[in-house]
Length: 469
Image 1 (cartoon, rainbow, N blue to C red):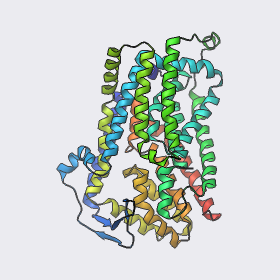
Image 2: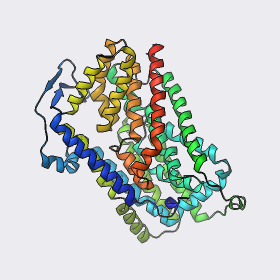
Image 3: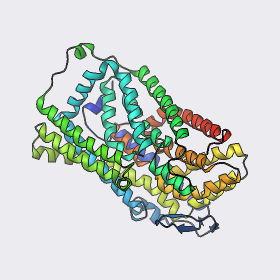
Image 4: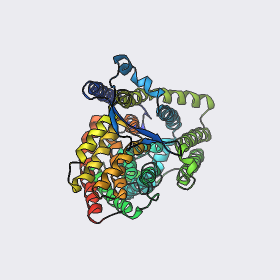
């Protein structure tokens, strides 16, 4: 049984790193090749009262000079930091480095193993009930407060827990990363997709919540069934003798765990409160990073680790996951290349032209597919909303499709593929930290993505037939 996560802390495995780099580089080459065959074009844009840039459909689309020089393409991983969205990439990288440093200190102090032993002792005999609760928790984080990147610090813990409970790393990723992505897509009250999209569509924020809540329940049941089925196939029997012998508490370890849970819990409460305190929504990643850093340092000190050793283990943990930084930069370079060559708008214009020729029932599914395609290049849900909603809503109105249903299609298209596309930094980070190659992840998860596409397409068609608005 695979148990590397409970022995080695966080390390990017060479195999998963090489596989990810090869795939991303191939995509970089494909994106560069597209600049030679797709003409440059752009939609007119306007600035709203709050300073956001959106498409101006009245201004229309026009062809412009395209292309990008070879040297700018070659340097695109670095140049991507200098354009709009570069600050977010830098923040994600800093976030990742903090996670790496803290987790290594937690692992070397013995707190991770102690915590897992405590959980297994308490819930080992009801591990599938625990699975259901963990999946629901991560889905709720994604769906009700829009947490996705913020879930990354918890993913390695769940992966290690999964292995300790007799499952594997894929089960742990399904319980955490996949669950967060599914919740983000269900978007019951997701401020970064549903909230922004509804505002741009001119409908009340978080209206139509009933339909999205039903979608949330159905998606949860499908995900739970998928992960549980896999876990049942690969599960290892737990050591009943060890479970029955009980667990021996250690005061200093308990102090460390209480401090860690308390401080990190405060950070999670702050993130949860961002639903009501909207000014916090721009700082949730920073809040989680700072709370995680403080929680880690305080807890390992209380567990007995010296300041010097904390510094050494933190630096070692930070450097051990530096390869993930290269993966993130290379992935972000794909959007930079297409933006510089002015072909993203051309691709979108062609897609809208195709949609106008389709029957009504097919249009809502095609809108879903348009968002799926654009999410490959633009991982930010809010940025994608500003680009797509001004085009999607007028297109839907031609076919008498409600704006509310368009928002649901947008949320579905934006969320699920976050945990499928190798251009998404959160997926790359989580796979790297778990030692799972992208190829292995794709082979395991593609059936679920097919099932979820069928389910969500059916939901959109039901919404169309029932006149959801």
